[in-house]
Image (cartoon, rainbow, N blue to C red; front, side):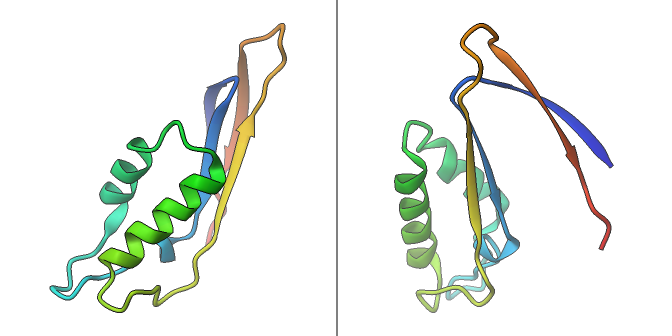
Length: 97
């Protein structure tokens, strides 16, 4: 599938693997994508370094094992934009497994 999104200058695109949110606590509740989205929204003004550190700390605290049972990868891309143009367009292709 192809998707097109509009981004503004200074927008941050966060990419991550499922190991980041497929973490369970002692009651076997999953951290999940909703909690991850909420955690990111609380930290919209953070730099990518601060955001990564805070997310990892929060999820480790949630985890029953204080860790991640699966691999975790996060990548942040900040669109700095062209000063004469306020909107950029990014095409995203979704690969098939």
